[in-house]
Figure (spheres, rainbow, N blue to C red):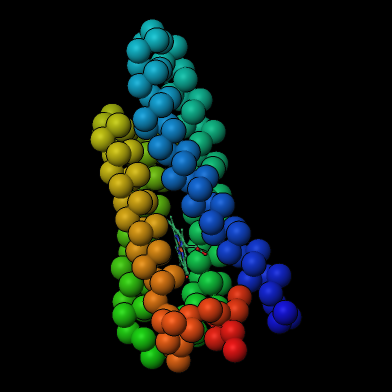
Length: 169
Ligand code: HEM
């Protein structure tokens, strides 16, 4: 066990739990809560539920963005990036993933904003939340591809690695 094994693990758990919370929460809101609220609530109660939900979910969104950035940059600069040195494909995928994640963060911030300028987008919340889920899924898929690229100097058949990303031999 290396000195920073605990930190590496903590950052990994943080990243995965944040993805579960953010994407799972968005799927629940878009495909369960909104359709049920639309069908059983009167307009006034629906508007109150919506305002309360946005205010509370906004805190989750902001915290998740912070967690993603801290654990993601740690992961990339300390753990996986160095382990993939000299592999342009890995770093290009990271660039694509990062840009997609920024789009996800921006859209999530707009959808949970209580300011007037975001009204137009929030009026079509169902459509934009659907896009948010789709983009989130693509980010997870790109991450899965990154994870399956063997580290530098490791052949696919010996791709067992230690937690710090170095070959486990
Ligand atoms: C929408 C936001 C994001 C989602 C849903 C997401 C999701 C994931 C998932 C599911 C993994 C695989 C975790 C594992 O198996 O250990 C992962 C890995 C990773 N993520 Fe993210 N992430 C997001 C944002 C970010 C950001 C903003 C960064 C960088 C600042 C980042 C950097 C990384 C790195 C470096 C890995 C390791 C990939 C590898 O195993 O080689 N992620 N992410």
